[in-house]
Image (cartoon, rainbow, N blue to C red):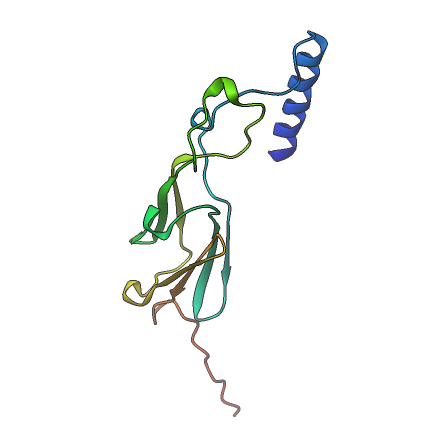
Length: 141
């Protein structure tokens, strides 16, 4: 899907440059919705989620788990007000966001741990006992 979007962006740049208009796309951050990129991995006894949230305060981030769904939401605010006509180029996104992720197994919600450092939100979700793999010994006869 990303390749198709990149191809479309190149086609739009080509179209605009052929009209004699500037090739810089002018937009304000509020015109574009956004969501943080995430990585999720299984560490055996827990799932670990990293969400890329640079420039945010922890007070602007909400985390919740309902059933098997982890939701990260919040709002990234611009540091200063810039008028639309003052933008030369704006690729940073601001505003409200929400990401929901279906977890592959149930977790112990009372033991979830979240930490925010250097723009990265790390959430550790311990698996419930029922979700942890159980080793079964084989007897030899």
